[in-house]
Image (tube, rainbow, N blue to C red; front, side, top):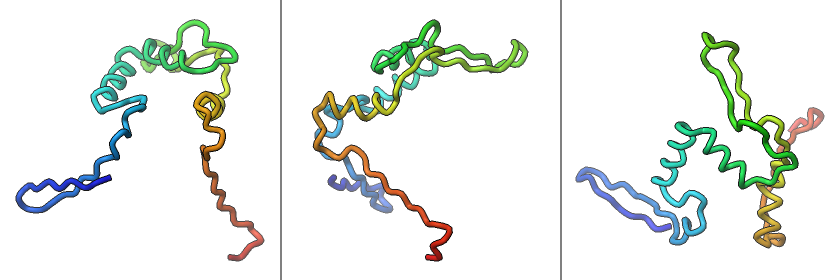
Length: 123
């Protein structure tokens, strides 16, 4: 990262840009793409989540509507139904599959730090 100085005339503000190539393989390459995805998730949630679901491994794929909900108590009980009947392994989808498909078996994927103080340990 390299700092870029911008001046408003009164004080300087440093802006640190990400290294070149950071967005080359990014799922969301820029803020405009992010805003488009967000808008679709709000305005067309069934289509948006259906497309997301296509990228996952499913033991049992979702059946029927991807998303059903009612937040208006005048129309009945409040509920949310999301991908009913679907079964997957989220750890496989997020971590294991990427390690396997991208041949990253020799690379650290996740560091776990457990801070645990025993009730018997006064320190």
